[in-house]
Length: 75
Image (cartoon, rainbow, N blue to C red; front, top):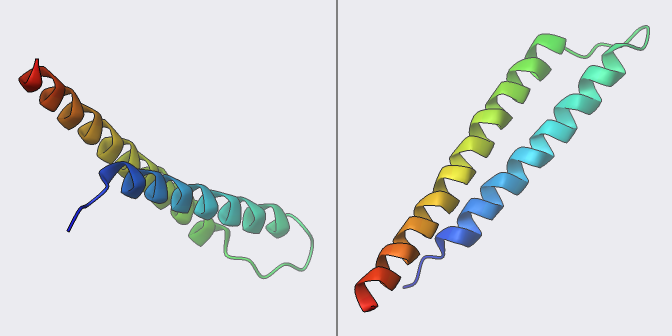
């Protein structure tokens, strides 16, 4: 069974982007009068999305290092 780290990293980044967009939309709607959006939760979700994106980047970097190591071994 093959595991594609690059695809996993990209998937994590896409999920983080989606979470950021959703949280940003909730915060924007909170500025409207009468909104029942919990801004604190949305800000926390933004922080979680940041950490999620960082994890995705680390996955992609690890994949690049692994490929680089394999290329160095074959030369």
